[in-house]
Length: 304
Length: 327
Image 1 (spheres, rainbow over the protein chains, first blue to last red):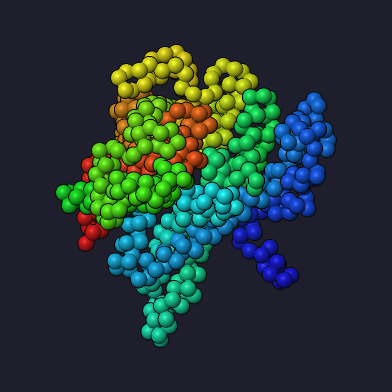
Image 2: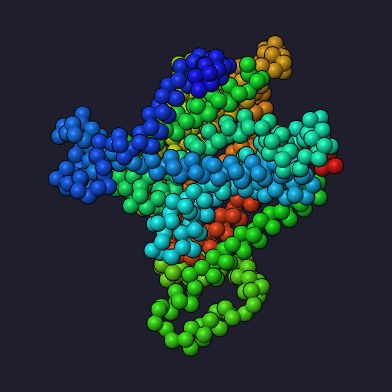
């Protein structure tokens, strides 16, 4: 354990990380967002979904720095008296869960199809890549919207809210695979003709073993970069879907649902209900994006 | 050339057929239309009668052929939520989306190119740096948050502009336009800015990097040596050479504008097709969803086809590369 840590601290990656203050700041911000989200039930000052803890007496309080704010509710409260800071932490948890699951799904689909396309070649390859091209010509948000819209319609009404989480993960997961497939196919085409793969083939290693243990490890760097950036874009897609009212239901709100609900109170002056979840969303997305950009540059040997 | 065009058209037709199949499955098998139209307490005879009248007892391929035939004529049945023909609803809502998307695209193109040229020529200048930094924020902000922030600042706090709807519209035949009244134009400002911002920053950064590259080339140096004015060099020579990639990207971004029109229309309750689609998804209005699915796919397939062909026409290098790659 200590050895692994020492090796990490001695590596190129750590050196390039330390050298860029923006990346360090992004990492701290991302860490705070993720920790706040994951440990929301223990860290949040209130439990906004425990009816015993919320009181209508506290509804629509402004944030602490405005007149009438209370130090008990740092970022104010909504119309039901729920603490905004706590709802943001719980909401980030949902947003992050959806984004990570969807990214893992895209990655699994994309890497598998990319490996198969690159390694098998022929008709299978041209079919997979043609489908990828066609999907790429439609914006991701539109495809996700259509899949989740159809998913909602197919499900019976009473199950829609319960299954919303899975429908969303599916709809975002199915839209993101193209980039992985293209990248992995590219690396596979390069690796396939190298001597070590041919040697493995000659001694009779089965194809799926060659793909998984010989070709795939060489493609993992770019996949990691795409996945990091993919989490950020999945967070945004989920927020947009929920904002449009076809994402997470109000009973299990994500950041997008919170922004959508808060929008109605903009005109009566309660701006904090929608703006603070918005800021949380932006901080989360920008910090993850910056980390992804840094990773891309750090892993690119041409830029060293 | 002909083979390339035919292949693209064939592929587009295939995509449309697949989309039609999805729309048809949605239309016919999800939420049994007979139950939806008759209600829960209809007798089995009534149901059978309607089933026959709607042609639901015929084999699958006949039904699909009828569906495609109707779709080609623009008929998608009756909206369940509004009890009016879907074709009528779409005709009513289309002008709103078209005007919004067109304004946003023009705004993005004109301002994007202008700011791109400016930031390239005044590299390192104060205003150029400000524009670049702001554009970075513009890239990372989601569309709906831009809309909400604009509403908060210009509609709620300053109360300069309306925050929802199209304002007053004038009917020109079946087309309703907001361009001709002051109210309609005022209502267009915030949604158009919201929708164009993402594309605008993209075009600006693209024009800037292309300009910087072109300005370094030898023929620009030669033009300077010939003693041409700065204006002729910058706009006649440099900008002209950046326009090919800009045109393609703008064409492809048009699709993005149409997709994000859904979000913008929802934020501003703009009575266009995107808002209609979101409402129909929320209330499971399947005929409207199916029609929108087919329509939006048609728009995208057409845009991609045109961009592909334009690319082919504009860039002769591509013709050689593609034909060699095909062998």
